[in-house]
Length: 159
Image 1 (cartoon, rainbow, N blue to C red):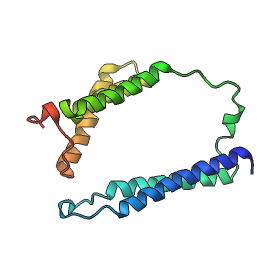
Image 2: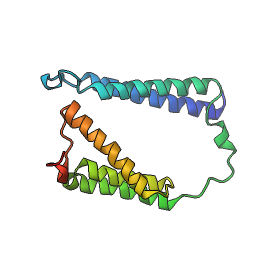
Image 3: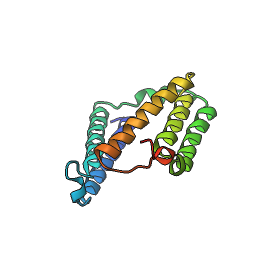
Image 4: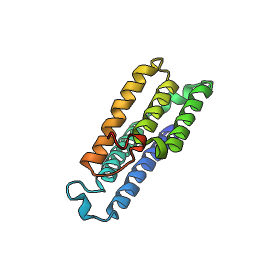
């Protein structure tokens, strides 16, 4: 087994290990009568299943020769895109700073726009509209379907 294939196998085992850790933690989430229709452990179980599937796939690929063999041929890595990293960091800082005051929908929409800009989008109005729709749907799903209050902020009376 090549050195890169061994490294790939370790990454796959690490991801599968995270899946097992997530499943173990999902087991200790106590059932409550508030979540009669959907258990609070549903999302952790889904994440655990996805991590286990991804880890298994990475391990299988590593055993067939590895998946990162093309990376070792790179002479010089590309330069760091500091603008993109700065926009991503700004999005996270804005999200954390504003979520209590403005609420989930507005803070997450701003985060969405900044992440889109970090990935090279040149359509901020479109990104704003898509982000608003996606975060509003997520908010409504949590608040109406699951009964979990994730904070509406300044939109409390409207939503």
